[in-house]
Image (cartoon, rainbow, N blue to C red; front, side, top):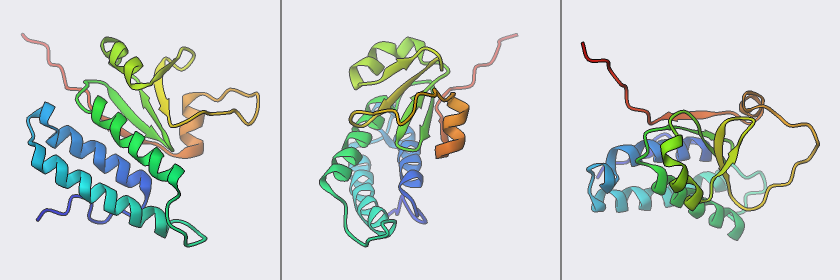
Length: 159
């Protein structure tokens, strides 16, 4: 049996690896359903372990964290096949370069467009700003960390 999430220590690493596995094994990308079921089973087990280990109080996941995790997985599954740059920044998913042709799908999934950042974003639940200053996407990356999952296919010019 293949251990798809060996060596994963944080939820952010887990989500990045899950996105990579979706690109490779999702049925829409030529993979099979049984492999995806096994990946999802392992993801859930590693998420429970990882989020428990990273908590300072030693408690297990709350219902809110479990719901957020399920929503995060559903969103990644829905956009796993698009040919755009997908980036995980903290608990947010950002879609940038190449997203124009997928705007209808992104709206359906629950993404919103940030015109000043020229990117689509998704976040679980409601978000309330803590201050009035608007951060650039680069500042957000610096503050929360960033994992780029480049889905864009290379395009070559024909001679």
